[in-house]
Image 1 (tube, rainbow, N blue to C red):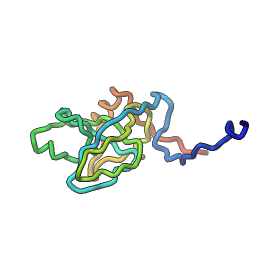
Image 2 (tube, one colour):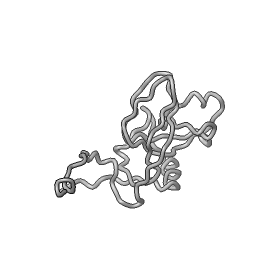
Image 3 (cartoon, rainbow, N blue to C red):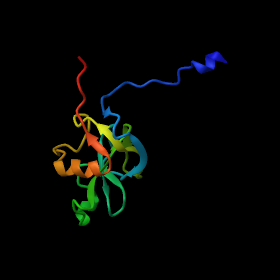
Image 4 (cartoon, helix red, strand yellow):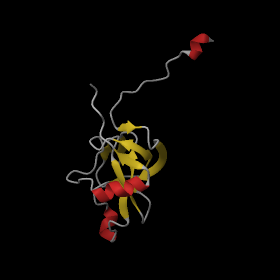
Length: 138
């Protein structure tokens, strides 16, 4: 019985994405929209939610829905991806996302050429997602 109490269940390497305990990290589910070309979204990818269909897209990448009249008001930063995820062309992908927590802005990924704006940070703060750089170890 003592062996069961000391059994190693798994391990994880610290990647520096989460940098604080307040606000507490909270995980929920979301659905990433299928792509025209398959890609792998990395852990820490900032995702925007479409108000039109509720699907998630990488922040800064114009989804196909943008061509249908969506604006920044209907396509805004929403959450951060928990794990590396392969997104294909056939189906939308259910994923786990952080909907609250304290994250290192240098570890958060957005679309190439996009920079997280102060307005993005302000909107995320309303969801209890804040950015704080990690303090280097002495």
